[in-house]
Amino acid sequence: MGIGGSIFLIAVGAIFAFAVQADVGWLNLNVVGWVLMFAGVAGLLVTLYFWNSRRRAVVAPAPAERVVTERAVPVQNDRVVQEYREVRRPGPTV
Image (tube, rainbow, N blue to C red):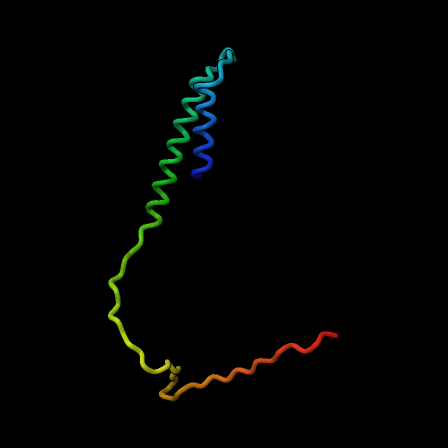
């Protein structure tokens, strides 16, 4: 449902339960308000539970520090691989 939907249900339920004084006849708006508030709280708890279970992170031990004195050069089949890049600027548009 999400946090926004849950808070909306709680707010609408509180309005029906505490602020509306209407007689609909066969429908008790106070009970409807309490049911909506309960559904909103339940939805909020379920949403927070799933968010909490999703955000558990596995913390790996810190790797040993390593000092690199030379630049890393790619090696392939015991040969140093050199990369050549040619950058061309776009010419004037016609």
